[in-house]
Image (cartoon, rainbow, N blue to C red; front, side, top):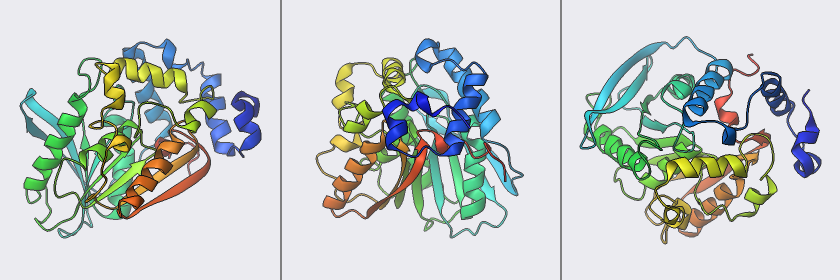
Length: 305
């Protein structure tokens, strides 16, 4: 059992799940450093190390193929991995997944196990996207790549083993959830969206940002670090193109499922965005995971079995 005192007032207000406490205890014992003290290269390696340690592995009964989506921003194109389970039926769904990491860290590798689990359990094709990130390629690069991939997938459903009539969905966690939500305003043909604790408002003005500003894991200092490395200007924090929660109209969007971590600075982003969608008559619902921190979705291998 980990030390609950590191959670301060939040540790008194909420029941912290034992696995949450154990996770941060493990990180402390391993000498994990706060994100804000790391270089981008160190943070990316740390993200990969955590994925290898906590995401686990599965024996995937299916195929994995790499494609390169044509892009005017890259001669090689945008790398994507396509996971097709052996029991996939061509009329089933295609899900395009955008990894988390504040638009700065993370990769296809950090969510490989997650994508395979989704493909296996949902019997759907999963497309895992390697989009460009800051600081090398700052916003809007990641959003540009996401839209290019979605349009390519929509035009090439048959090439990746589906039918033209197969439903197309988007999914992402954290910054990837931000991308998934944002592209729904610009790309036609998206049938559903699954958002895992998404960042939908980079002004960080909602109450949960202050409530969890100094808690373990994602907190205000790490959010500031992400934005310093992801954005070109502070004006982008209020640009509706990258902040779905600041869009004027939420009409004609695909149905949404939003997964919420209770102990998360981004928690209120999910609730406010869900309410905006519902007020615009978009089918939307939330699932709250009590006692869980931001990033819990990336820890399926923490306690195997």
